[in-house]
Length: 487
Ligand SMILES: Cc1cc2nc3c(=O)[nH]c(=O)nc-3n(C[C@H](O)[C@H](O)[C@H](O)COP(=O)(O)OP(=O)(O)OC[C@H]3O[C@@H](n4cnc5c(N)ncnc54)[C@H](O)[C@@H]3O)c2cc1C
Image (cartoon, rainbow, N blue to C red; front, top):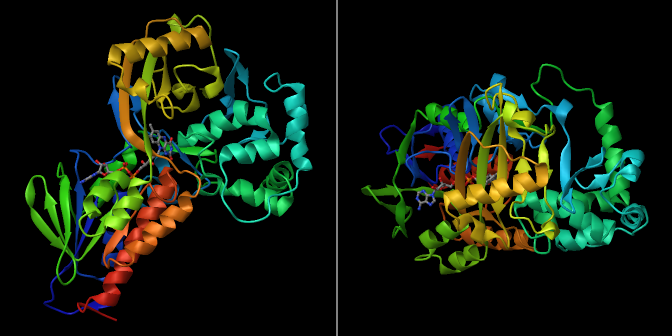
């Protein structure tokens, strides 16, 4: 492709400077360079910093994550992007020799049996000997080998799925705190197909989850690990925290005009083609295409004037609020030592926190040697009022819970609170149908693209993939429709 000399640049606005918007802007920049396209890209972010939910703070030798703290290695897009922008050697894995996750059961920390992969037991002895699940509950989980697979393609809730295959106890003690914890969702509303489609595939391809997991594990064991390709743990992070990726992307966006601290207040369609963008502190911008990489409720407000139907559908994607509280302790103040990655809490236990990560055990480079860093989660479905507690109240609640559950009554030497209001999109049953309807309707509005955690995956790798895909669609649209580009 070539640009006709003297023609005006194609203008593209990416609204939202979280990881989805950053990935989109970076992809457009690199494609423009590679194809010698004359594009002007604006990345517009309401806050004074980029990163959205990704927020790492360096405080007194601690690396504290306010939002996400790692990403799944199996989904390659995050590690690939980190490599592309020069962070390959900064990728770190979890300390798997210390990998142990606990589940709170009747107020006590009980280890998740070895060999439980996500929710599926794959090793008989550790599972049989575990005190976490009752004998009847274990027998019911074993019936997964006999329960016929679901025929058909319709969606169901995680709650219905796990009850059907593994029984009620497995749902309450394992699936709800682990699976719904990742998505901060109510398992009775959470869509199986939008959040864990692999489980449906396992039961349909292998007849049962246990059989399927065992076969997949065998296949994975046969594959030789590729040496020299970075850490191989399930989850990855960056030495300096996840904001390292945001900062490096910001540095790499040399051909993109960054407009931080500029909230988009209005988006209008132009009479012929393109859009006019009103900003809180900048003259309006006229662009040929727009990528909305912002939460669905914000996107709804911006498209309402010209696409009321899309706006209404976007409002159907619910969000919940959460908060994370990081606490640091001197090792010498801890009377009952602990080791592992932390614990999760089934909602049946009715506690005021939902999980606690033992951050400086899970990852290196997170706390000074003589200290320990923990991170607790509050809020989520049914508990959102916790997020409105004052700082002092929230720390008091968390300390009370850590004392009750871990016997940890030491005085923290540092506390940090991060509130995430209406930040976690809820993928309810039939979420994928809703998203398909929204995307289909967007095709009626040339040059408008939606991307980000609201749609097809909340994890960082999925957000990056979606940002990249939106960028490719914009480039495709512009190359097809704009006379400036000659094939
Ligand atoms: C507490 C917490 C822990 C998490 N843990 C993990 C984890 O460990 N691993 C993982 O993979 N994922 C995790 N996630 C999920 C993941 O962090 C998010 O899904 C992802 O970062 C969202 O990225 P995004 O770019 O789509 O949206 P966001 O990060 O929400 O970015 C959207 C941006 O748009 C901006 N914006 C909104 N409206 C406007 C406007 N009108 N004008 C201009 N800008 C606007 C916002 O300010 C924001 O910066 C976690 C999320 C939370 C909240």
